[in-house]
Amino acid sequence: MTGSRLRLHAATLTAALFALAPGAMAETLKEGRFSGASGHSVSGLVTVETDGGETILRFSEDFSFDGAPDPKIAFGKDGYDAETLLGPLKSDSGAQQYAVPAGLDVSAYNEVWIWCEEFAVPLGMASIE
Image (cartoon, rainbow, N blue to C red; front, side):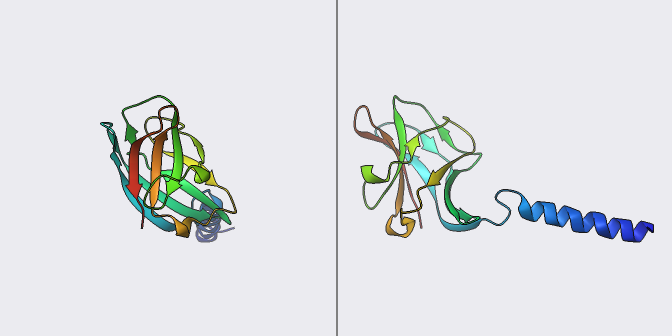
């Protein structure tokens, strides 16, 4: 195989592997930026994406939360909706993702909440559009 053909095959293989990588074909449905609530500091970008037929809630690398007991992640429509609970916050900082259940229609919600389940208070919220 000549050098130019080898480079072409390598470029084709690299492109194919990139296309198969998680997030490579993700489509952003909604996004927003967190702000704190109840005296807490929360910041960072959050996106709702479809990737390979699944819906995923992603926090970006710039996500930061000052910490509190029992933080949970959920959607809301002009307020926290306990029926949409996705689970506990995985980390107080950095990129993380949460699987959205197949039956949950994210188009019906305009917020992502970080909620203290123990004390029933908001810790942070992002309006998503």
